[in-house]
Length: 189
Image (cartoon, one colour):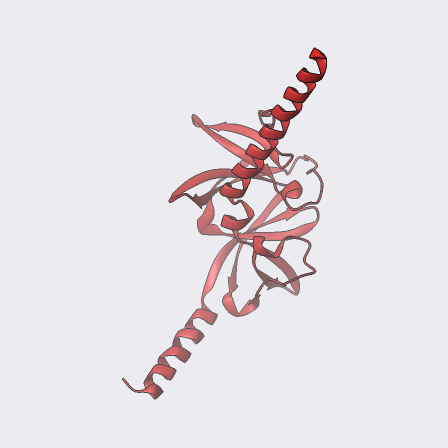
């Protein structure tokens, strides 16, 4: 195979990749439009409350029981540094599959409302901005354009990084136990 054929194959592959359309679920969070690739979604359920778990970071809204499985529910607004979500009649929990430690895990995310499933071609998606975004750039896989509106396409495995969340939970638990130990030591004096 010569260089001309290699270049032609590369150009054909690039053109095919740019014309590919993927399906995304769009949802609202603090009046901003977000999307996730549909293959990450396992289920969408109406928000019916959660069981709070003590000593969890603020973004850990609680857990739900889904057919016998305990599913953590993350408040995406808090995770993105935007304050707590306001629960309304359209609030939903989107159950996503997140890859961590060589396996898929179910994680729920609390969103204000679910909009629709749309197709966005790769040519309509720009890379995430290096700075100036309202969400950490490593949480974003791209910025899509739909009917002259921007939609932030999330990188589920980074935005819901279970490794990072486990570290934050451990940190919260350790700081709480250190506080109890120092408090008890002060009482003894």
